[in-house]
Amino acid sequence: MATLRSQFDQALTNIEINKDKAKRAINVHTEIRDVLEKDEKLTEWGVDTKLIGSYSRDTGIYPGKDVDVFVKLTKLDTKSEPKDVYNAVWDALQKEYGDAKEGGRAEQQARSVKVTFPDKGISSGANSSFAVDAVPAVQDGEHWAIPTKDRNRWTASTGRWVTTDPERFGDMSSTFSTSQLSPVVGGRNAYKPIVKLMRQARRTHLGDKRPRGLFVEFATYEAWVSGTVTGDEWGPLLAQTLRLVAKRFADAAIWPLCDPVLGTPVEPPVDEKDLANAAAVFSELADLADQALNLDDCQAALKWRKILGSNDRADPVFPLPPGCEASGNRMVPIVPVSRPEARSFG
Image 1 (cartoon, rainbow, N blue to C red):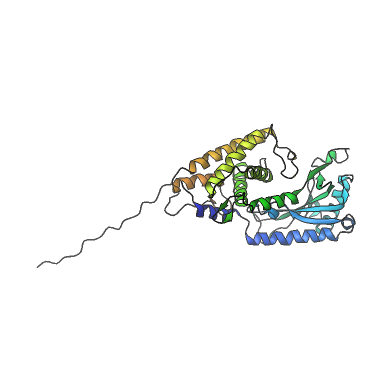
Image 2 (cartoon, rainbow, N blue to C red):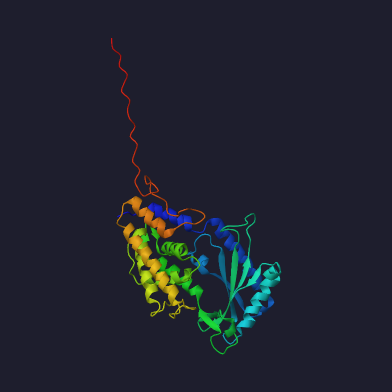
């Protein structure tokens, strides 16, 4: 079986968020949090901001353009009006950064406020902009609630808020990734790297289609905590995960995927057609992965290349092993032809 550990290690390096980008993420989310925590109205409501999302869980992949900030208002609960809560966060950020409609950098989203941080000297491409999404939240029992995406329901008696707990999922993710139940490859905890590879496969083959990266991460987490995924090499671990996630997508229409913290179906739900498409795509990827496990190094690498695709840092992200041609054939060594020694007669 072709293990290709060093090639997987390089692929992970190619898709992981680099140190400069991570440093920038720290700087911008710290800036946004400082603005929010100094706002008079939000302070009155007990504002407490936290970094959430794939950046906080270390499951994000390049280019890592978005950072999520959870704006917890500890003195409010779901009796509060979503519109009032949202507008308070919007007011604080548009006062600091200006309204995007008027040339500023703050922009209203369905239930968050987006603030862009354009890169200096870069006008296009994956690194042309960087953004922070600030998501307001109020207390909901032992968890938190954020406004529903459907603003028409903000004034309704029910369905105005969606229960969530991204901080708790981050804790669960980190705890599991370092537990004895989680496989290890070459001394490296394997869960989060596999999540990154799964996100890369999703981005390559689904693009802007649903399900999004968090849904894939939830499905991966469910597969791994079940103890079904075993091994100590990247290839078999990724192949098993692709197969289990493909099956989970196929079953999700009648057996909804649940938020690991809440134990309730993920909101908003993914359309059945999108689930069916994702199931078919990931099933094909799982087939490719299974084939790769039974091929020689060169041919196996071609399968992994197809699964993981490219980004603007590496095309493709999965390198070929030494001695392999782009076609998947092994290079034939050139044997130098020795010249006969000159002989003199006479």
